[in-house]
Length: 121
Image (cartoon, rainbow, N blue to C red; front, top):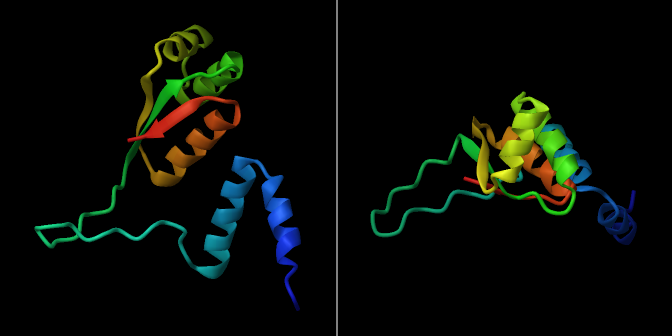
């Protein structure tokens, strides 16, 4: 069966970040591979650095869809609506700490989808 590469690329262009994230996870599970970049060897010491296992999600900016960002922050943190608003108003602020890579990327994708600027630390 021949793949229609151009058609696949066009479909991917129209997908949301969350849909692409789900696709990557499905491919990883189906084929037993990982999309993570390999860890580079350390410079002068010659030892390999350990891969980061926990991540902090920092809201850098709420963007133009502040209400949507507040709703996502409320859901993600379990905070009240008022506390979520205060958190978003206080950006840049760390929203959640110690998340797995998948959890951090999922929250980041949700926030970026509504226009927020997010960094993982």
